[in-house]
Length: 161
Image 1 (spheres, helix red, strand yellow):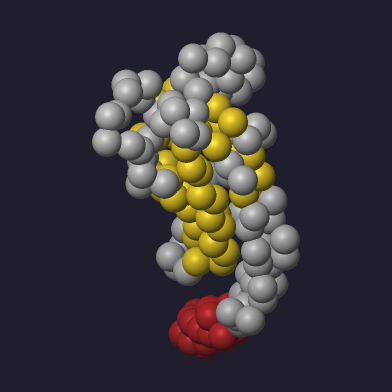
Image 2 (cartoon, rainbow, N blue to C red):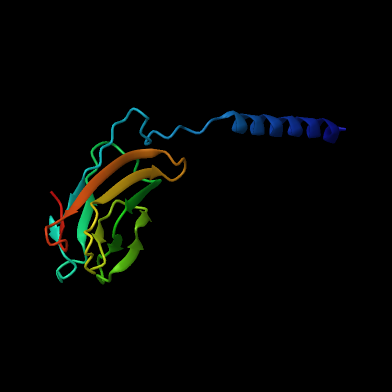
């Protein structure tokens, strides 16, 4: 008979424990900027003139200079260019890695912009490089940066500024 009374009491205790666990809420993430948080992203070039004949660099190094507060994780850095392409080049082996004209990387490290060295008799177009910092989970854009690259009169050297 005692077993008959113990079973409902045990059942009710389990229900109360589960109910209490399901009714608690996880703390909200406080590291996510709100829509009103201003984040600007100037893109800092390493050099202001570049030709593919230079052996000292695989391209113009571009580093995001983030002004504002961003969460430490969950970010995707999306680089795009409408002419040329991006390459990666870093320690420990400094091997050049092709990244294409759109590159999505998970950190704010430097990329290099370069172009194919063939002469174009009709002239090269101005180059628009953009960087968007996007929340991987929601797809929200936290910041946007742009850099324009022009050409010298010989049409073979990329020039910033």
